[in-house]
Image 1 (tube, rainbow, N blue to C red):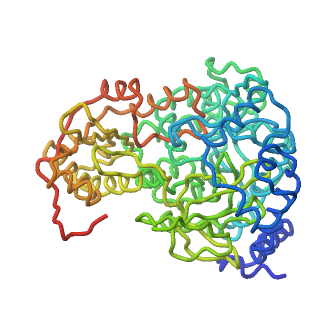
Image 2: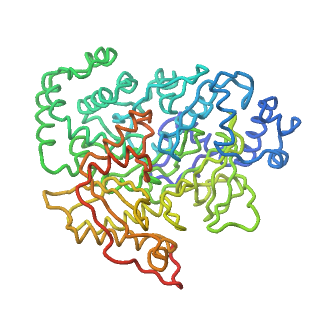
Image 3: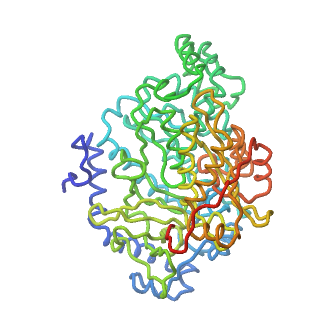
Length: 595
């Protein structure tokens, strides 16, 4: 079977025989998506037939879709939590999975506001590794010569905890990086990192980041791609360089290691890497001491061909800042995954961030899709199979996994953009969670982000941009109102935006919010004027440090777009430089439809 149809790539054939086999696999899976899905469901139900959970629904050994859909209900984490808690407490009977639960994968501390424990089994590592193995063969179709250099990736682990029953609980990436799949991976010239395993596996985030940055600087001319898991992680690395370049340059000049780096494995490893390089040290001092950091990525790593970071969903707000630091390098979003399951990959990884679509790989789990309607349907909608979704429609993702999640609501809203063979391609739209509500209004993450993006355009004339934001619904005032915290970045040594400009930003945000919000503001008077509070630089780094100190993963951390936890709001309020309110009411009319 030819792999021509996988992509209309500009580079033609696969880079090597290994790539050809990977692309062939993608073709086989996507051409036969429905039959693969049917087999996946049958395998899951057959192997887990004797679990307590499935026996309670009287499947009687059935493995067909019709029986499964008629007898097994859709569930949320709250529905499964009692079963998961029993496993966490030490119950080793086959509750959700016939295979022993090997560990728990913790969801992001800021996804849906709570830390969740997702059961997993050993073979899931093989499935994740399989998806990882498909990424570079696709990328090689678009970018030549990636075997001639290295990738500078800022990757981190989180020290794991144990449940009362003794099972490890840790983020999915920590599980992967600590596995033999990663630690003893065979050499692949297309996937060589500048960061040694010892640095990635160091639990101290400062020592890990310092070492990874130091190695990246030594290898600066070999770096062909720069990345992190999320866009915010890459920006944190740039901020780290801004704060530590002097010490890094000193270490390179002397061939020594910062005394703050004490991890024995790192010290031993770096003894083989460190060498005095006064010329490189002088270069770093020259570039990093300049007032402007525009294009700093391509100035220090001049052969970088693209950034490998997630910039879809809430991460899209980082795109202007990434463009500033990289000179507009392409941003590759390669895969779509979560703690619950790895879903699929981007078959056109060099597409614009606004056009990114992920192809669901039908072998990863059994996928169903709940139609996501703007208004409640008179009859509860029926779940749709993977091969039967319709282009242009939005769905909530529902999964059934080998590890014991059955018809589980992931909480992601996806929009179908097309098909690759028989497998649908989806654009990630948002998490299914309302962020802000004062009265009858309901503002979600996508709406808030769009409002921030629109308002931030008013700052261009001041050579200023929004680099981070979060919000909360302040109900202490009567009426309550939306509060949005902005951290700003001035491109030049300017005074920044005036109070009048900031007030216009407040009003522009309100104009972008939905009609229910504007009706509450204008007609009902049930919502007060939107407020922007400008916080000092570095505030959101402090916010992340606080979250990490409470158990969040540095890999999975995402700035919460709404905060309700009092210590966090107190931290933000203690860093406020100025406050601004909408000077007038937004437009609203009964006959105007805007959402």
